[in-house]
Image (tube, rainbow, N blue to C red):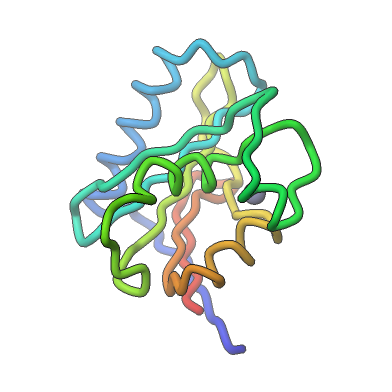
Length: 141
Ligand SMILES: [Zn+2]
């Protein structure tokens, strides 16, 4: 399977919107975690579903894809929000953001291997995630 990735040096208008939304969600969350991970399932510039990492919570889907900890990754949480929609997964874009709690600084939000396999299983072709410099990187499968 081939994949390639690239880094964009400026946020697009849509990416800026997702970062702003992530910061708003981070401020209103009750989840006590050092890092807050968010996953946005998007079609074009429409947000179809938003997920957040959840502590002390898991789901059979997460277990199936190898998540071993009692923590639901934002990717699976986002999927659970839209699972009843009739989605064409290969036309969906995934955006992952991660903020450290308190200072709201963007950091590396590359999906873990379990979530990557989960996305591949769904037929998702395009994943964007923030990196350590707060820029978005894109992986296409
Ligand atoms: Zn994961």
